[in-house]
Length: 212
Image 1: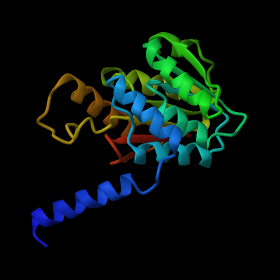
Image 2 (image 1 turned 90 degrees about the horizontal axis):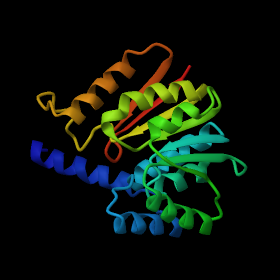
Image 3 (image 1 turned 60 degrees about the vertical axis):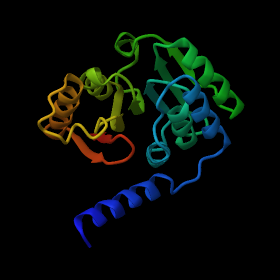
Image 4 (image 1 turned 180 degrees about the vertical axis):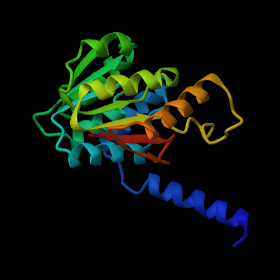
């Protein structure tokens, strides 16, 4: 197989994997709302990964940084304990309003907080959460990791979306501010004691770590 053919096959495999699981009506509604709001939601493969992670650890308490139109919120809730509580933070109230409506139709009542994540997160309790997910400002990626490690219980999971940042992170000659911050955050996590990380090439990249 030629190099070009191999790249084509690899891309086809990635697309196949991304759409391996068919999403339900609520997810499709949330994606449509995201499109109307001009938002880029997590891919279906990334969403399903969040559902699996939440289910694996029987998550009862979760924090989401970046509600958007509720695509990832729905994915987390579908994996969580039915009595679990999702606290989702977003600075855009209109985005949360769209998410609230869609999630309510699906039978969920998350705790939605309007505000800047780095102002809200310090008010949440230490060690009280099973899973933290961030899909927000790349320039604040390092702060999200720091806050997540404080919020998580031992054995808790943190997931950071946009960890490959439109494939720029792997381009080591790319020194744009966002790319540098995300790359430095990944490297810091890789070398950090007390965590078990993995970088998954799903969607725009998903960094997952388990807190010891």
